[in-house]
Image (tube, rainbow, N blue to C red; front, side, top):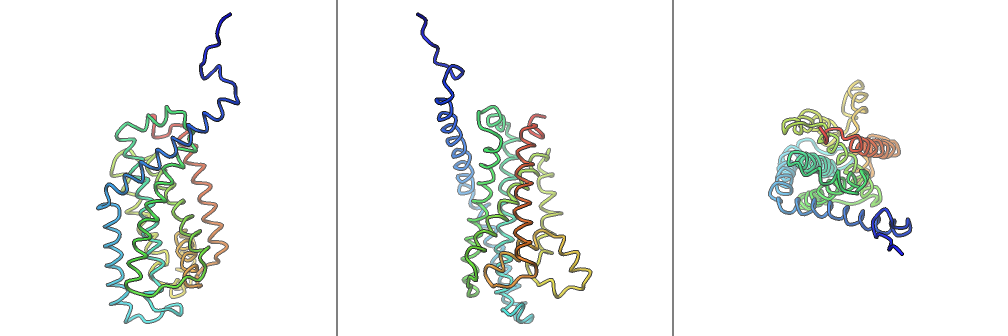
Length: 275
């Protein structure tokens, strides 16, 4: 009587499912640990520059210029811009981590190892997204500590603070991955942050309330998604917002879903990875 061959195809579905689950968990954890190790290993590039930049913003805009501006939205100017500066650092670092890491995997030709592995595309996208979230939150935490050296911060709604920063980090981590998928050289991964992300951030209500703008400029500002993220986060700290917070959450959640599905689809089709 012949013995059954113990191969993946001969295993019963009940046996395959636990093995597949274990493989997915190990693979996902590997991506996340690698991303975290990368952030810590090059901390001089990932953590120190945003901390220095935030310190300069607080010294120049908060302390020096803020004294001349006075109160804004019922708070001192430095208190008003503090949530915006924290969110700005979270957005730029979440985006920058994924775009540089994923493009580095493409450039180094080790993205193929992930593509030929049994890991599904949605899990690979989730792993890189977690890397962007981790860097965004780490840098955001450092900037928050720096903020407390310059002003007193209170929290109006903890749930809004946490959810707004997580959703914003998710959105821009996924946006960074899309940039990395289509980028063919290092110049193309810096084009979007320089010419799109930076202007949108500075015009997203980080340093001012849009009520100071003329009516036509306010209408243009409402087309800027970062405005909603900054104001939702500011609402969590100060209880004030230039936009409807419910609408802000709808935009963030909608953008996260659309970008996640797009990333999975692009990875499945091999766009930018199998060329």
